[in-house]
Image 1 (cartoon, rainbow, N blue to C red):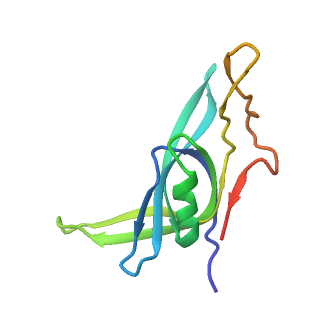
Image 2 (tube, rainbow, N blue to C red):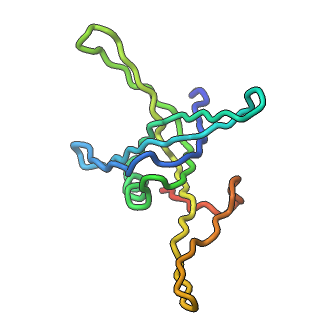
Length: 140
């Protein structure tokens, strides 16, 4: 019986996704997600940022590469995976990544030109938290 290994995380892409292929041709997309946490400290609020490496496979990898870009908001559901290896220094090293099984991208708001007065204005975005149905799911 498998133990429970599940994670749900939201944040923004730190850089554009990187798409590669395995030797057998399976697409693998990797990207880094920054997730912010705010907490009260003394008389003000503090911000804590955590960075997580995300890995997607097959059609989900291709979709993430096409839709993702630096700064885009994303919600990831997946599992944790730990890689371990022996370094040249003789020590055992390890790295934990999130293998995504479901990815949702926050909507993007493009600049809209008002033809009446020629001004550029940005469409208003809904503040967090996201309401149900506002995310663009990408699953395969």
